[in-house]
Length: 123
Image 1: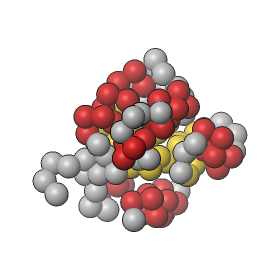
Image 2: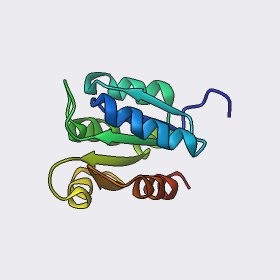
Image 3: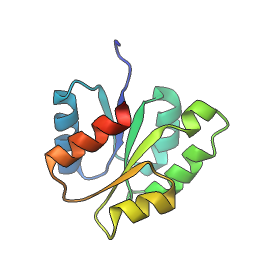
Image 4: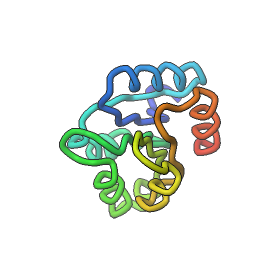
């Protein structure tokens, strides 16, 4: 697929971002990382990833704000981009459902759990 971004990871914590990128790259996916919520929607528009892995707590814009903006985009393919919401607070599945994400994952998470969820969302 060349330089196509499969997964756009939006995570401000450097160690978590690098760990997730490493795990998913080893699975064969092209992963791009941004660390600022303010850049998220523009990056999604530009890169058109198959999956967005989105932290809930980000600088400049929250994950829930980014997700609402994504779902409201006029391009129906972009608006329906699969989203895996990462959160360190509360019920990840309930939070993801409330925000309109396709799945949720609580931090800290097991590598196998991340791989399984991403694999399901990518197929």
